[in-house]
Length: 533
Image (tube, rainbow, N blue to C red; front, side, top):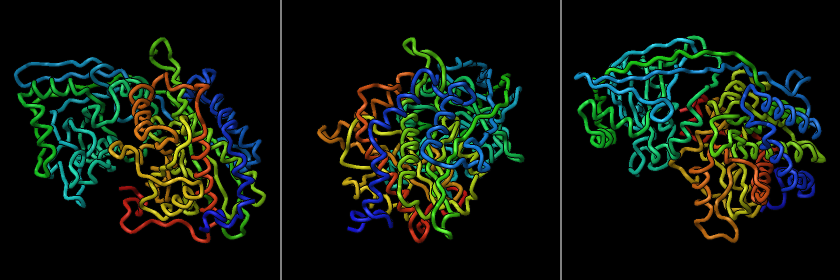
């Protein structure tokens, strides 16, 4: 096939010059430093984050990239707010029974708008999945007025375990908890509480504790858009107690939410919530390096490669370890990004289009660095033809397959298939479609902005392993290491699979950069309108 003989206009020999730069040794060197204790988990606004950003910029400069910020700097300042919440939550039933959940172990919460004082009092209303999707024939709100109420809802969507609804076990954007909070705010709710279960969220309460308790980092609010007065998560056990206090049955309520005839259920329980935290403004940075395109006409267009370099910094100790190194998530993806910059810079002939290598900050806080970039693009989004994102490199060995998410709605799907085939890999589907990985990293921001995007993940069919071994390793990571101090560098990592993954991303980017036409959305894609689903 053409894909085996040529790489989008570059002969095999030319492409090989770039591919030679992608080695397990160079990936290991970048990963080893970025995930080291010296960088203290790379929390935004910290010394470790600055060291990581300087390291990335130095590697970009060594590779031969140009500064992309005003032609003189690799650093795009990102204005952020650090909110240090001190929440209180209490619930009282009409008969006088009351609960005051324990922060951290039974609930986490914060003001939805970064302020130093917030108070909410309102009736608790169960709104099922909290979804309004008329195009799917589903409306949990049924036009009921929920303004001033505190909403309680489930995460995920009604398709979980129901093949005929939504997209079955493949999570849709409506199942993301961020959508639910946004919809509650649009409807004028005073607050919202998400019910956590391991089955619906795909991870344990320990991830909520490490990710959502304590300080929060947010962007400056967009003028005219008001957040909720109070929002947060409650454990399943606490939700059951609250529902019981209201004289209702938890299992019955959960089952009722699965019907398209569901209507909001007032509980009679009064929620009193407050946040007396403090806020601090600070700046972090996206790191941006540019490889200018060679074509006089297409060179003004750009392919953007992204990976987030931030982590969770220093936090609550687990087994006496307080540094959340984030080796897999996402020092490894940043190592891929640096290696891709080195690979493209080594090409004897530059691609037709320009390529921007963008290491973004504050992804773990809500895709903030990429959101800031799309609000303040260094190259106009109208000239941005595609985004290729890496979030987690394969650390466990070579596979027979590759996974590229987000491409099913655009012509990038064919690009991904050709890139995988050129590496002798079969392109397979999402390893955990019920967890919605396509909505959980920086490529989503670009897709919401109308830019076709790809999340280059890695396969699970490990060579020389039993068929279920890869999935078991993935589940073990989620259960034991995701957003935990134990996600740290190990000298026995096998980066052969990371090399495969990086080569697929390289081939995709080179193909798009040299193609005569830019990627296009397929008819009916939820992102083709440019403002997300």
